[in-house]
Length: 316
Image 1 (cartoon, rainbow, N blue to C red):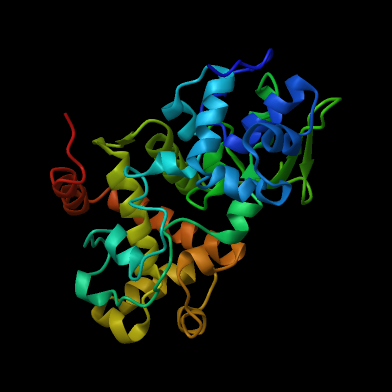
Image 2 (image 1 turned 120 degrees about the vertical axis):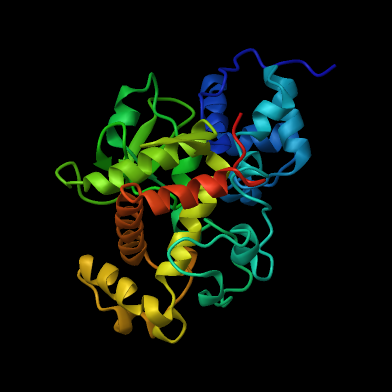
């Protein structure tokens, strides 16, 4: 039986695998790349955060579990694989992946108003956001030691609803010797005001990711349904005038609410995962307004509850 390492601090709730590996290496006073190379035979170039936090080889997971006394499943949950099949259906960017992911959901627009036009997109996976995650200054400051949350790598929230502040680009460095360093990659956004509607939506999304159940103003639905419903609305917000039909004015008003021109943007439309951070913020702000308005309308409440009674959103 493989001998355990003399020091093996357990992972924190919601921690990313790369973050835990950094802390393990720090406890053993060796660089993370050396730890992985010596134990699992993984070349230095393959120990980057993408491979560790996305879907690393099974033997890496099993070796880390053996050396630390953790359950295999617990270590796997520190990677994106742990979101399958609840929050994500697959880690493969399938053709028509977003359409399959939303499972024929429709909220703002009828289903036939949303054309399939974004092949080989993995829902919620944005290259820039995954490789340059955002985090909350207060969450890191309040932790016993700073660690990266896995869900910060994805574009499904813009704020920390716990501390009511925007998430900011960061890098966490854990040297073999010395204190872990948090590097903020942009100017301090501590004075950045997060709109209440966005905080409300991000709080629901955070519950979906971390707890699996979401509390809406008038009831509960599964996290699996909420995260797909949110992605559905983001898709609907990008529908062009040709397909919008009688809903064109609704979409135009939403774009106007964030200070942007509806027709101008849609001439260069791309799926949410492939747009820049600025436009992702516009989409999320519009989605927050959509849900805030929907929660006050009995007809929209009924629509969500009908979805919750379907196979995707069954509650006890």
